[in-house]
Length: 380
Ligand code: N2P
Image (tube, rainbow, N blue to C red):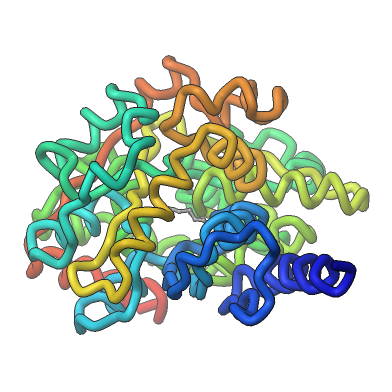
């Protein structure tokens, strides 16, 4: 008995430690006594820092399914991996626009079998309706989490070096005179044309979904004008810790990543104060979907995982951990009060009116954006 208990707790500890890199999880030779023997392996490809590790170990314990867990930190990386086919993944987490819509249209996703997702109805119908714009009838995806794109700022340092800085606008980053003032204190931008260019276009007062050459050129020029002041254009997954340790004064990235950094900085207690700016000129609002690739090796396990994640208690644990809102209203009372009442996590209705949505572009337009982005990275 003792040996079994020990084995079970070691397995759980190992599962926790292994996430979010590639998780090697409990050996099927040492199941907990009450474990059902569903067996098999579930291959998950999710964003970095985007789950409660406890949820994964609990899923394994409850189902006997072993989870292998890989992470990505941009839609470009996810699409690169998926476009070749045979990714080997059972669960992926693409943003509704553009990636999820693109994959659905390309028949790269498996239609969900709702008879295997008894918790389907836990999702907020209004949010399902919203993502149905990318997936008519919600055939291919459940809503995982959502959020905005904005700036993580190091408020304590900015107060000192730039007291009258505009702390509610992309002006802070995009006006060259401001970027210049903050350059020494450190500016980072996440490396993703797909997720940065729409906000720049919006800041310029142009259509975030524009495919006009003149608009793209304007966005590129605006980015090149601040380029000398930008220290790092790096994967979004590398920004969070760097923000938390005070390495940057301004970083353009995803909302919850900033709030996670804020929490980590507070815990460290070294005086680093982090804040989130949802740009007043309009922030991109995005929804991430739980989807199954058409050629997934273990679709049954994938359905079981989606069903598990849609449980209110599981979702609440995830939101508490990653600081992104979920689409399961029954989870909200179980979300920590401070997280639930943080308008940077759950945007207020007023904040939602100041958001915009992106759509997927034609491949040629997408390629033009990516060339623009490469010139920004290279600085010419
Ligand atoms: C988590 C990134 C959030 C997902 N690190 C952005 N769609």
